[in-house]
Length: 140
Image 1 (cartoon, rainbow, N blue to C red):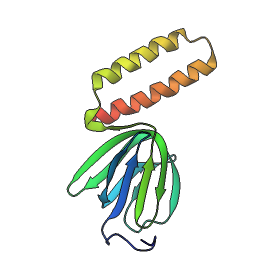
Image 2: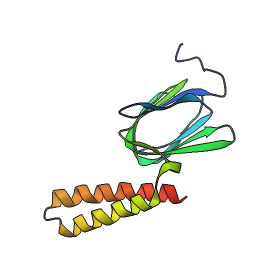
Image 3: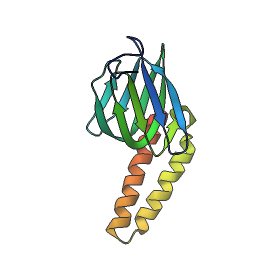
Protein backbone atom coordinates (compact mmCIF):
# COMPACT_ATOMS: atom_id res chain seq x y z
CA UNK A 1 0.00 0.00 0.00
CA UNK A 2 1.30 3.44 -0.87
CA UNK A 3 2.33 5.70 2.00
CA UNK A 4 -0.04 8.35 0.61
CA UNK A 5 -3.13 6.17 0.88
CA UNK A 6 -4.93 5.97 4.21
CA UNK A 7 -6.29 2.62 5.43
CA UNK A 8 -9.51 4.59 5.68
CA UNK A 9 -10.00 8.24 6.41
CA UNK A 10 -10.54 7.66 10.16
CA UNK A 11 -7.93 5.00 11.02
CA UNK A 12 -4.28 4.08 10.63
CA UNK A 13 -2.23 0.94 11.29
CA UNK A 14 -0.73 0.95 14.79
CA UNK A 15 1.94 -1.45 16.07
CA UNK A 16 3.39 -1.43 19.58
CA UNK A 17 6.47 -3.65 19.48
CA UNK A 18 8.59 -4.93 22.36
CA UNK A 19 11.84 -6.91 22.16
CA UNK A 20 10.08 -10.29 22.25
CA UNK A 21 6.69 -9.72 20.64
CA UNK A 22 4.22 -7.35 19.08
CA UNK A 23 2.02 -6.16 21.96
CA UNK A 24 -0.56 -4.40 19.77
CA UNK A 25 -1.27 -4.55 16.06
CA UNK A 26 -4.53 -2.87 15.10
CA UNK A 27 -6.31 -0.08 13.27
CA UNK A 28 -6.66 3.03 15.43
CA UNK A 29 -8.23 6.48 15.32
CA UNK A 30 -5.67 8.24 17.52
CA UNK A 31 -2.65 7.45 19.66
CA UNK A 32 -0.90 9.74 22.13
CA UNK A 33 2.83 9.19 22.61
CA UNK A 34 5.34 10.47 25.20
CA UNK A 35 7.78 12.33 22.95
CA UNK A 36 11.17 13.38 24.24
CA UNK A 37 10.09 17.03 24.40
CA UNK A 38 6.36 16.58 25.09
CA UNK A 39 3.42 14.29 24.44
CA UNK A 40 2.08 14.28 20.88
CA UNK A 41 -0.95 12.80 19.17
CA UNK A 42 -0.94 10.75 15.99
CA UNK A 43 -4.04 10.89 13.77
CA UNK A 44 -4.72 9.44 10.31
CA UNK A 45 -2.78 11.32 7.65
CA UNK A 46 -0.01 12.40 10.06
CA UNK A 47 3.12 13.73 8.41
CA UNK A 48 6.13 11.41 8.33
CA UNK A 49 8.13 11.52 11.54
CA UNK A 50 10.78 9.54 13.38
CA UNK A 51 10.72 10.48 17.08
CA UNK A 52 12.49 9.44 20.24
CA UNK A 53 10.18 8.57 23.12
CA UNK A 54 10.76 9.07 26.84
CA UNK A 55 9.42 6.74 29.54
CA UNK A 56 5.70 7.35 29.87
CA UNK A 57 2.24 6.33 28.77
CA UNK A 58 1.09 5.43 25.26
CA UNK A 59 -2.68 6.04 25.05
CA UNK A 60 -4.51 4.15 22.32
CA UNK A 61 -8.05 5.27 21.46
CA UNK A 62 -10.21 2.28 20.65
CA UNK A 63 -13.72 3.49 19.94
CA UNK A 64 -15.06 5.12 23.11
CA UNK A 65 -12.35 3.61 25.30
CA UNK A 66 -8.67 4.32 25.78
CA UNK A 67 -6.12 1.61 26.50
CA UNK A 68 -2.91 2.75 28.17
CA UNK A 69 0.56 1.17 28.06
CA UNK A 70 3.62 2.22 30.04
CA UNK A 71 6.83 2.19 28.00
CA UNK A 72 10.42 2.65 29.12
CA UNK A 73 11.23 4.94 26.21
CA UNK A 74 11.89 3.95 22.61
CA UNK A 75 11.20 5.25 19.12
CA UNK A 76 8.15 6.00 16.98
CA UNK A 77 7.99 5.72 13.19
CA UNK A 78 4.95 7.67 12.01
CA UNK A 79 3.58 8.08 8.50
CA UNK A 80 0.34 8.86 6.68
CA UNK A 81 -1.05 5.36 7.21
CA UNK A 82 0.93 3.95 10.13
CA UNK A 83 2.49 4.44 13.54
CA UNK A 84 5.00 1.91 14.83
CA UNK A 85 6.37 2.22 18.37
CA UNK A 86 9.45 0.25 19.40
CA UNK A 87 10.18 0.02 23.12
CA UNK A 88 12.43 -2.15 25.28
CA UNK A 89 9.71 -2.62 27.90
CA UNK A 90 5.92 -2.42 27.54
CA UNK A 91 3.43 -2.90 30.36
CA UNK A 92 -0.34 -2.45 30.09
CA UNK A 93 -1.13 0.13 32.79
CA UNK A 94 -3.93 -2.07 34.16
CA UNK A 95 -1.32 -4.76 34.90
CA UNK A 96 1.01 -2.54 36.92
CA UNK A 97 1.03 -3.78 40.52
CA UNK A 98 1.42 -0.68 42.69
CA UNK A 99 2.85 -2.57 45.69
CA UNK A 100 5.59 -4.10 43.54
CA UNK A 101 6.56 -0.71 42.12
CA UNK A 102 6.61 0.84 45.60
CA UNK A 103 8.87 -1.97 46.85
CA UNK A 104 11.18 -1.50 43.86
CA UNK A 105 11.42 2.24 44.59
CA UNK A 106 12.21 1.49 48.25
CA UNK A 107 14.95 -0.96 47.18
CA UNK A 108 16.49 1.66 44.91
CA UNK A 109 16.34 4.22 47.72
CA UNK A 110 18.34 1.81 49.90
CA UNK A 111 20.87 1.29 47.12
CA UNK A 112 21.14 5.05 46.60
CA UNK A 113 21.97 5.53 50.28
CA UNK A 114 24.85 3.08 49.87
CA UNK A 115 26.04 4.16 46.41
CA UNK A 116 29.69 5.11 46.45
CA UNK A 117 30.19 6.57 42.98
CA UNK A 118 28.41 9.05 40.72
CA UNK A 119 27.92 6.58 37.88
CA UNK A 120 26.01 4.15 40.11
CA UNK A 121 24.06 7.00 41.72
CA UNK A 122 23.06 8.42 38.30
CA UNK A 123 21.90 5.01 37.04
CA UNK A 124 19.87 4.39 40.18
CA UNK A 125 18.29 7.85 40.03
CA UNK A 126 17.25 7.26 36.40
CA UNK A 127 15.79 3.85 37.31
CA UNK A 128 13.93 5.43 40.23
CA UNK A 129 12.53 8.19 37.99
CA UNK A 130 11.14 5.60 35.56
CA UNK A 131 9.57 3.65 38.42
CA UNK A 132 8.04 6.86 39.80
CA UNK A 133 6.46 7.57 36.40
CA UNK A 134 5.15 4.00 36.28
CA UNK A 135 3.64 4.42 39.76
CA UNK A 136 1.97 7.68 38.75
CA UNK A 137 0.53 6.05 35.61
CA UNK A 138 -0.93 3.19 37.68
CA UNK A 139 -2.48 5.55 40.20
CA UNK A 140 -4.36 7.64 37.58
